[in-house]
Amino acid sequence: MYDIEISGNGNCNPYTIPPSNSSSPRAYKEGGRIFTISPNPATDKIVLRADSDLDVGDKYRMSIYNVLGNKIQEYNIDQSSIAIDVNEFDSGVYLYQISVNTELLQSDKFIKID
Image 1 (cartoon, rainbow, N blue to C red):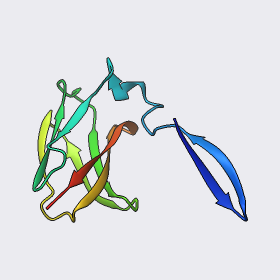
Image 2 (cartoon, rainbow, N blue to C red):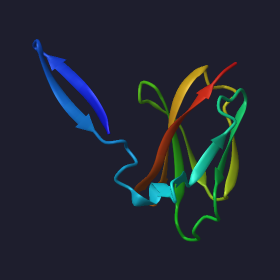
Image 3 (tube, rainbow, N blue to C red):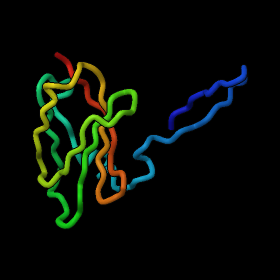
Image 4 (spheres, one colour):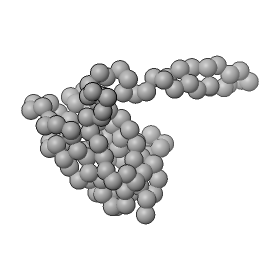
């Protein structure tokens, strides 16, 4: 859980926001992630790997966002390992989400360096 305070008109109100993957029991498999990204930080490419074969018939998708929340790229994942070119990305922190069909499966971040 994440605790944040949102202020407006001089008042501070505490809110608790659960991590984005806490509502999905499929996001963790025996305490570990279903997908991993390496290297992190990255310079020219990242490799997304599933820790097991993907379920046939399911549609896996990866979306990459900058820290402002703007979607930078979206990829269909049809293999248990794919390389993604990040050479043209600016240096910084990027967030990614992986979904299967319409369910959020996992979210995390990676760092792009020059």
